[in-house]
Length: 630
Ligand code: C2E
Ligand code: MG
Ligand code: MG
Image 1 (cartoon, rainbow, N blue to C red):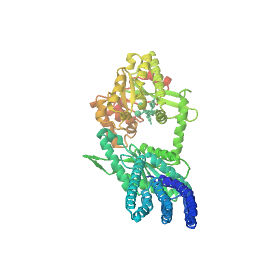
Image 2 (image 1 turned 180 degrees about the vertical axis):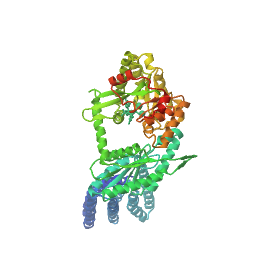
Image 3 (image 1 turned 30 degrees about the vertical axis):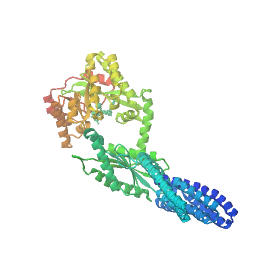
Image 4 (image 1 turned 60 degrees about the vertical axis):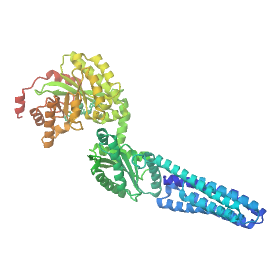
């Protein structure tokens, strides 16, 4: 059971027990007075009052937020003694009256003793260390008393008392086990046996209050396994579960028992440390701790016949300098963890002010973006795409947000935000409509293009009304011939969905004449098989490979491999981000079909693009281009 809750429950029992002792105790004084044992009764009652005062002090002493683990332990020990003693006093009362000659006193003594036993078995049911000895303290004298009568009925009553004691112990024990089980289930994760989210949030909330009081620090570690979904998808959930269990086991073995370890859900774990005196110490220790943990988690996993390799991204946050809620600290650790993912995974990031500012900026963007469409702040640009003879044969539509507050905001930044908030659906439809309008007007002006590419985000792509919307707009603005020239650029992130769903979504659009391009190819994890299965027509080699041409041999190799592979699969190739002649020449030499980049043109406004289109003719044949030296 959660120790804190358990202590709080026991604390409440103190008051009840004091009331149940002090009030019926008064009746005993009257009884004593009526039967000539007033002195004894008064002394006994005096003891009850003394012990009750001690109980009251214990009740007051209990300040959960301000008590350390050790203090709590000592408090609990004292409390145990309090319970033993106060019930012991009832046994004392029993002995006092059962020793008298008057048989009516015996009846009362017997009744109160049985009553006290029932009280003990209900109030102390949460703790076996309490109800077990207390029931013995209360019932053994009664059993002895009956046995000492010496008559046959005395033996029978003694036997009955033993049975009664047995029943009380049995039922208390059963309830105790049930409570324990319920508490366990409410606080633990069924798969790994670690604590669950609910418990960890409670725990962190208590830790926050404690460190606020003690002026100390603690850290939380949020661990998320990298690419865990791939294991689930490729090897099945059973293997996935076994991996999670093994990860939990490794974390548990590595941590000290002062750490609180929980699984928040999925492949996300959280660790909360003990308290530290200084914030810097805490951060250093947290970092070193995380590094070692990462190493342990990266050791190979042997599950069934599979040998698996995993890494994790860890976000670290320290608790102690602000009186916020657990949720707040977890969220910050989450932001740090996502930053670790964004920086290439398999890493550790400590939450810091800079990250906090960035999050704040993103929130601002989120709020302002909402009005950007309404206020006409979103504009479209068109970046030319050239063929091997340097003639413009197509373009890519790229959006720009001209915000009065932030100035120019890169789509790389706000598309993510729009995806998160769902605004991408509205934004995406707007872009498609504007782009189709432009394409239509160019067609009317006789400006011919072979292809016209529009970026589509994953969330937009899988939205239920996407294909219907595209169909509606395509029919409104484009003739059949023009529709065949539309290309939707998707990134490898669409692979988050299963292949059947991707193909289903693509097929519907293909029937309209639209084709697909795999954008930023080489940065994600599309496999050869996924390329073969998807109805893709074009590969766009990611800018990062092109920009490093001449620097890293591996990038050259990557590009030549992609180009060769594209030939095998009969796909058109586009290289983006070409900035230099050398890059262009390299790509040309290796058989790339289409070229895009600042070397030819930056993304242009509609009018400028029209002018470029009018000027554009075949520059020269390939041989000339490959041998030009200037
Ligand atoms: P992307 O689709 O890979 O677009 C290519 C990006 O490379 C564009 O950045 C383009 O301006 C930039 N670029 C082109 N040539 C060069 C070059 O020679 N050097 C350099 N350094 N950069 C070059 P941009 O416009 O900032 O767009 C970034 C990303 O934002 C796009 O990457 C795309 O993923 C997303 N995006 C842009 N417009 C849209 C849109 O309308 N819808 C959606 N869903 N995403 C969009
Ligand atoms: Mg693109
Ligand atoms: Mg790209």
